Length: 582
Image (cartoon, rainbow, N blue to C red; front, top):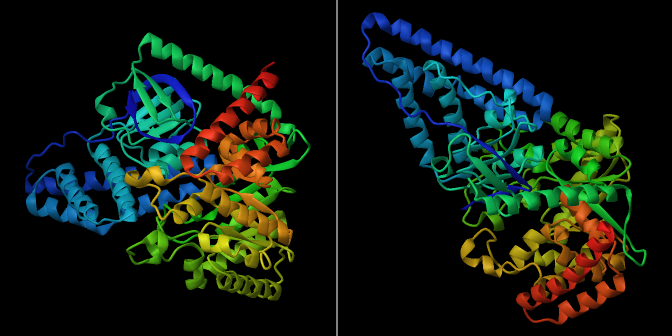
């Protein structure tokens, strides 16, 4: 059994297709003076072929998932015109008189080595891009065939050191049923694409390409991050049964798509979805979400070299607003900074980036970037039921400053006779303790609250949630977390404004039970989780939930709360399954 990082849920069992993404051997031989021109012609032809291939992949990708993710290929095409790669190669072929594939591989290696020495996430991504394009040119020079993932004859599970954007762009989800890679993380391009295409995937599986061959049987557990190669009959039977149970459960849960998420005593609950791109709209509809509670717009800005234009943003927001209308779409303004960067911004490295210039702090410093987004959101509001939300507000002055910018943009649109919703709701994301502590003050000037529990927990316990050495401190069910959340809910209720929770806690049954008991009736989560949470809520009585929440608030530790909530939720889930399956 191999372990990795689960990045896209689901279980698949299938045959391995091992992608050999690396060039194992590049020939080296001397050429004479008469052969120099021939080598340069071979090189330019290989570059031209790579350009045609990437342009064609980009065209198909735009048709499949839209322009947002396809922008990555603009950067790839630019690499094919990079003078540091091309001119250097031609110069060395002339001077050293070695064959062009050998010279190009040497130049490529030096460039990659230079970029790899820079400790920066963005530069790491550029290394991957250069490597991807470089391998494509080398394969053309060596007359090696690229695996055409768009034209596979049978269903496979891909295993590779990494999957390049051009690999994922070609995937046919009816043929590629899952994948496992040696590198990557939850926010890598590969992981985002897996979730967008709803393909179960595990990344960061050490040395997996050394442990499989094409044709092996493999199990990918995208929930637990487990990969099993050539399982024993006992394990295979176990996972076949588990996969069948999940499929059966999904079919039964799909019946709930059109029913309301009311509690046993009739309390109406809103279950909205979190999205990262407009391509997830179909999934939202099929899973029965009540609108979009969190549209993370920063993904429009990532994995590219240039800023998205106001028009590009407007088109993306308008598409979602129109598709979801009349249901509400809450568009979160830029949450760049922290661990999310774009090169064009030239943001300096900070000692503590998660505590530094990010989210609303960054936007207020850069109105040249913020205002085009505000214009795009306001313009899209004319085409549907759109709300706007500011991330990481820590005090009233930030909210006021942001609202002043919004009002200024409204006046601009008025002067230009561009329509927008004059009554658009403007809300605040509560994800730092200071905002929670003054929620009563913020509630007087915000139209709604959304609680971002991932960051709220991180900042409350002063911990880096991806640091495995202190991961034991990250306890969403800790009584301290619920006390803080209760303050926010009470302040919102007193001011009569809606409050939603959009962090990971919204999709965890035990947490949902306690949050219901605190008086929270609006949740936003990954759309695939919605049916299960709806099933749970339909078997809960709010008075029972209140007793559970009251008890949790009086407990002393996170462990005690985990144990108590687990015992309560298991009984409810058991009752729910008996009723549904019976």
